[in-house]
Length: 114
Length: 112
Image (cartoon, rainbow over all chains, first blue to last red):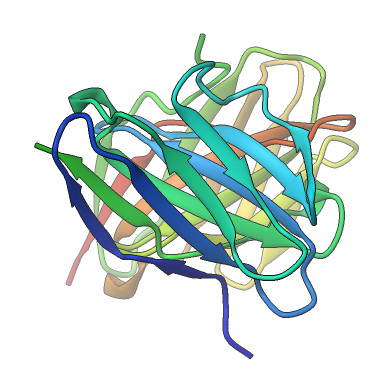
């Protein structure tokens, strides 16, 4: 039973390009969460999705960032027109239900904007 | 505004001794707390949790203590082993919330 799969593990983008980060939840999990870890900081919540629905996007920057979790396929975190400040580790987590008892994280995607 | 704080960025402990990692929070409405362990280039893995209705939870070598009046929790690892060397994050959640609020982490080094 594979865990939460994120790809790519490392992504380098030039300023102004688009970054697309993918997350496949654990089998049987229908809840997906995205977190971002900036250098020297803890993980910060970005967005919570269920299949085809955004439940809570209170942590998402208002511009350039979007997320989806389609009926088929992985969840995608999309960052348009990346800037150097977007360089961070982006972690996806999944759960089978409410997150109150913790969830399983993927290994993350490290985005570097040059 | 950092609602969960880990004021010690790093900690070194001799193998076999006790490791104590501390965490403070500001929101008295938090009702569930967790500790995650993270190795380099990996995602955080769940370690142990505690509900606000308890003041202690134990799982093998790991014990979490919660002091609600002080808004403080701690993770005790005893005896510490070299494989425990990692970054430890504490996290808290609200009963009605969808997210965890993470501290900035404490890097534990267990010296053989």
